[in-house]
Length: 127
Length: 377
Ligand code: FES
Image (cartoon, rainbow over all chains, first blue to last red; front, side):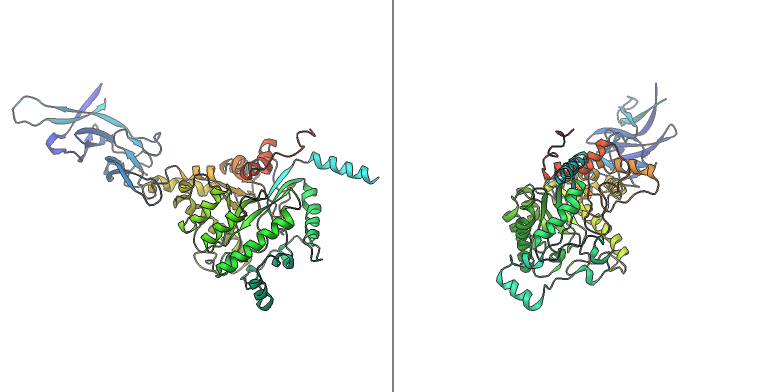
C-alpha cells in the first residue's frame, strides 16, 4: 500500500526542473529528467541536509589531468552541505553506492473532467 | 678454533631472519668520488670548494656527525675500508640480505641553482657508487641521484644508469622547488617507468639552497621543529602526486616516502578520502578514493618509528596504513636515530614481520627471496 501525494501539473515541472513538496510529513524532491520523473527523499544520508536543495548538475569525468568531460547532464544532485554527489535516478552516492537516500515512485495522471485540464504528477510514499 | 667460531657465527646468522633494510647512509670518500668528475668541476672545487648549500649550516643534528657515536668509520681515504666496516657493523651483524643505500654523496646536490653542476655531481656519485659499493658486495643496492633542478637532465641520468641491476630506485630530497606531483617532473617519471624504477623522496634539504622553506609559514628555528616540518612537506608531496594525477598518467609508477614517518599516513588518507567525496569533480581524473592510490602506488619506510603511547593502538594503526603491503623496514644506519632491526618494533606476527622486513621491499625492488633461508630451516 502506498499513499499518493500531489506534486504539480506537468506544465509546472518541465525537463530540467525540480519541485520540493511535503508528502506525508516528509520532504520530497521531484525531478523531471528528459520527460521522466524521479522522486528522492529530501534528506542527505550523510549528515541530514536537505539534499534536493543542492545544485542539479552533471557528472564530470576525465581522461587525464586537465581534461574535464561532462556526462549524465541534469542527473546529479550535489548536497548543499558537503557537496557529495548523488544519482537522482537511483538515490545513490556516485562514488559510494551503498550511501543512498530513498527514492519514490512517480505517476502522471489525467482525469477527463474537462478537456483542457492538465495531467497531474503524483509521488507515491509507502503508507 | 677459528673455523668453529666462524661456523657457529654462520649458524647464528642463519637463525636470524633475513632483512631488507631500506634506508642506509654510508659515507663516501670525497677524493675517490671527485675523481669521477670532469676536469672543469674538479678544478673549480680545488679552487672554490664544493659550493653546495648544506643543512648543517642552518640546523643542528641529533649527534656529532649525525651518527651513532660508536660508528667511527675508518679514515684511511679508502672506500673499501668503509665498506668493510659497514659489512661487519651492519650487514653481517643483523643478517641484512639487501641494503638499499639511499643516495651516495650529498643531498646538497639537490639544492644548488646550477643544474649542470648538479648533473655532473650526480653522474660522479652514481658511478662512484656503482664501482665502490654496489659492485663490491651483492647485498648492497643503491639509489640513482638525479639533478631534480632540471628534469630533462635528470631523465638523461636515469637513462644512462637506470638498467644497472644494483641501482633499484631514483632518489631526490624532500626539500623541493615544486611539489613532486607537478608536471614539471614528468620527464623524471617517464624515465622511471622506462626503467621500471620507483621514485623515492628522502627527507633532507628542506629550506636549503633553492628549496622552499621547510614550512609554508617560513623557516623554523630548532632541529626538532625542522624534523616535524619534514612530515608536512612529505604530506604535500603525497597529495600533489595523487591529485595532480601522476598515478593516472603513470600507472606503473611507485612512489617511496623515506624517513618521513608512517602512522600519519592513516589519518591523512582518511582526510583525503573524505575531501575527495566532496571535491572529486574538481580533479575528476582522480577516479578512485585517494587511499586506493596510496595502497597501489605508495610505499613508506618505518624509521624513525613513531610508536603510539598505548601499545594496543599499534596493531590497528599498522592495519590502517596497509603495513602488510606498503611498509618497508628501514634502520637509517648509521644515523643517531637508528632503529635496531631486532629491537625497534613491538611484537608482531611472524607473517607481518616477514612482510615489513623483507617481502614488501623484495616485491618493490624486484629482489630475490632470502637465499638459503628456506634451506636452513
Ligand atoms: S549532509 Fe549531505 S554531504 Fe554531508
